[in-house]
Length: 56
Image (cartoon, rainbow, N blue to C red; front, side, top):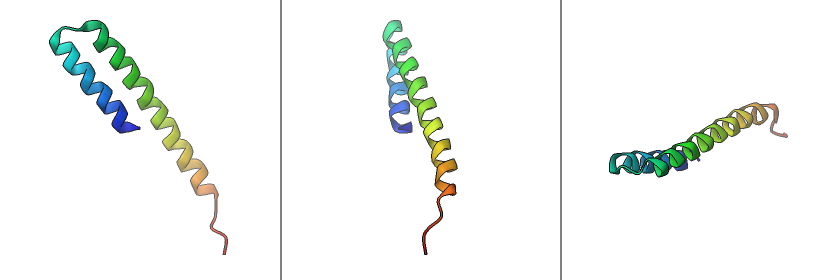
């Protein structure tokens, strides 16, 4: 998921350099959303992953 966020960030940077402000703004917004969703999922996996103990 972080890979998708980086991809949209690169698209935004290229669009900004070429002068496409609307596309750049949209791509940055999408990148932010994906980044924060990835962070939340990572934290949840840390919390719930540690609470499970392997059965012996």
